[in-house]
Amino acid sequence: MESTKPPKGHFALLYFASAASMTKRTVDFFEAPVSAAALFKQLELKYPGIGRKILASCAFTLNLDYVDLDNPEELMFQEGDEVAIIPPVSSG
Image 1: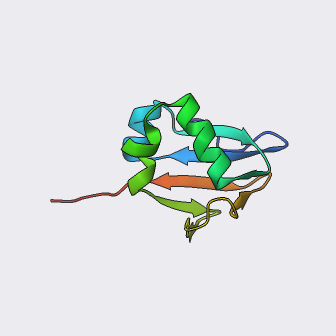
Image 2: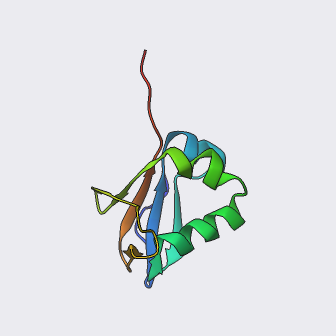
């Protein structure tokens, strides 16, 4: 398992389920501070199609609390934060 501790000046982005499958990673580190909107643009460049295939239907947490992404330009991720992409899960 990769370390989730971000280097200085960065935050950790954790991937689960289909997000981890698409990125082939469980964690990435990004420079902070950055808005959610800017992060999504970076993710789309790094993993083309992730916005439509993954992010559009996911929940997000910031330091273990679910966050509302109605205004992604206003939500800022800071140094040391832990952000997670939580794809929908089904059970049978």
